[in-house]
Length: 77
Image (cartoon, rainbow, N blue to C red; front, side, top):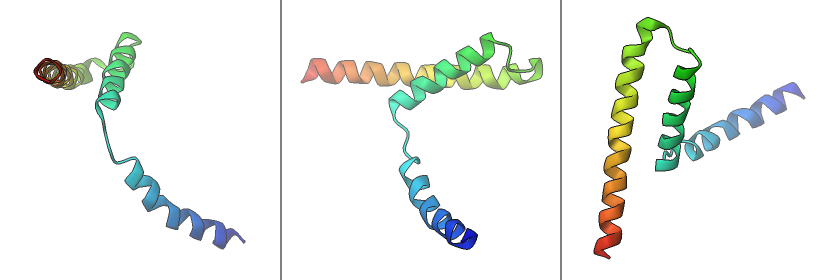
């Protein structure tokens, strides 16, 4: 019986991974919020803050560009 459960889990895992493989702007916004919350709660060690900050800045810049492009396409339409 245990073998049957494991077999089913193994055959379902690739499908679940494929469904979750897509990222959208809402996911990226959520990541930005998560980083912000985690850093305000002291979740990162001082030696980790540089990479966290760089990643946060890249994410913010990307999201700002996407927002500008969306606004431009709305005005152009």
